Length: 115
Length: 114
Image (cartoon, each protein chain N blue to C red):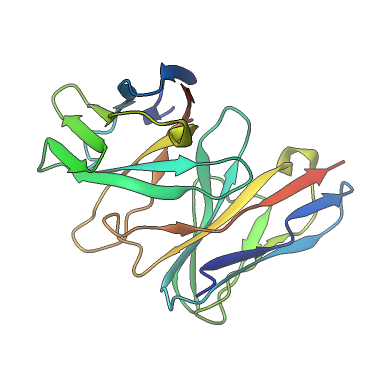
């Protein structure tokens, strides 16, 4: 059973507009969420993260919003650029009081930003 | 720093053959892990290690073995390859493996089992 769900396999956006990528989760014990970006033939790279004690985290053009009651998070990219075209993975982790928490990844959303 | 390196980049195996996927990192990270990515699927954790001499199973460990004799290296062994192991394999590392720490991924090994 999938614990982290990205229900949109793909998203197409015009350059300069906002891109919104969504992610839902089922495990209420998740307390840390991350977004990774992946270009073809490369490994994923970390983009932005958010702790469950926050509802928003911003880094430049990228903002992640967390709605714990809805078990939903979203990644906003404003403005979108052609170089943002990639697959975006949502990931979640449970932090067991100091011990390591492995990441659970969603299936990814392929973002295409058109010039 | 080279970061996380993986070899080979691409490999073709016949069913039943064995091979080792190599992974090395030069960042002195304690935590290392192996993931596989299949079409339409996210990354799934195979095995991980929180330090030299310590390994544990992830979500999909069957058919794979690992060992961690040094901090730098974390090889993944396929003992008897099966077509279901056709996938792209990624190695990753971080300082202690805590969720709040960034995991650094290698470029991947694409494996085809015939």
